[in-house]
Image (cartoon, rainbow, N blue to C red; front, side, top):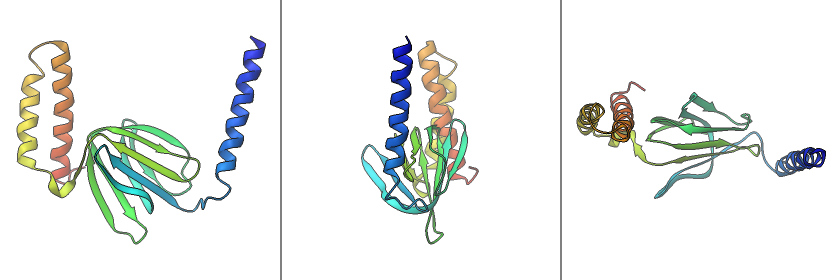
Length: 163
């Protein structure tokens, strides 16, 4: 058992050394964003000023030199401010985010829709349908319907500017 403890400490020390070594040639005053879905990369290691990301723990505002963080996305708006102050808003349904020690941030979303492309009427129909389905059927069907309702509700809020 003592050997296992020393092995874990050695591994942690090595990881800490490796992480510190990766930051030697990195401009820590820059935030480099990679933002993608399975079918498209919206940003690829692009320097940005700030990224606001909806997570299960709340909206995470990421700037350069942000503490390393991982999170699970919840349906909502990812807001990206470029170095000139221009803001882009994109809706994400789910996914993950990671802020790394080297100043890079990855947002990997299951689905991404530009806010201006959201069809509010279709989202309202989906929300009503999902609410109706959430009270019928098996427990699995109800859970799936609740997830659909959550995404549809977030789409409606994004389309109407209530995010």
